[in-house]
Image (cartoon, rainbow, N blue to C red; front, side, top):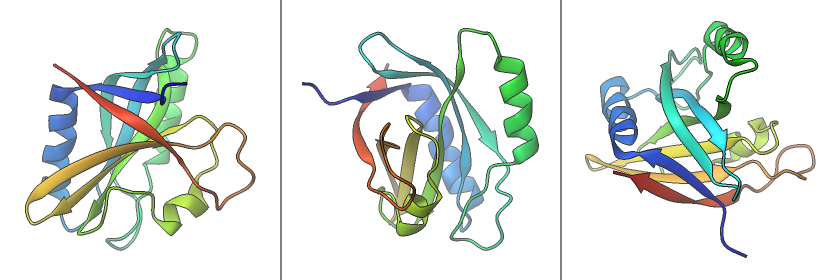
Length: 147
C-alpha cells in the first residue's frame, strides 16, 4: 500500500513560507481548502491565511469567525476544509505534544512548517481516521509539491 499524500502547488507553499517569515516570532496558521482524490490524496486547491488568535508565541488558534464563514461558504461545493497549516518557529516540522493533544478531527491534514537558520522546511501529517481521544500519534503524509 502506498503512503497517503498531501498535494499542494508550489505557489501556495511559497505563500505560506512567506507568511511564516512575516509573522515571526509567532506561529503562522491558516486553512487548507480542497478535496480528497479517488486514490486518497488530499489535493489542496487554495490556502487561506488566518489570524493567530492564540496568546504567546508557541501556540496557534485559527480565527473561529473565519473558520465558520468558510464552512458556510463551502457547504455543498466541490471543495471543503481538508486541513490547516501552522509553523514551529525554531522547532521541527513534526507534530508537537501540544499538536497531538489538540487534534480532534479524523482525516484532517496538518501541514507543519519549521523555521531554522532562515530556512523553512515542511512536512504533512493527518489525524488518523480511527484515532482514540487525544493525545495520539499522527499519520505521516507524503508531501507532493505541484509545479
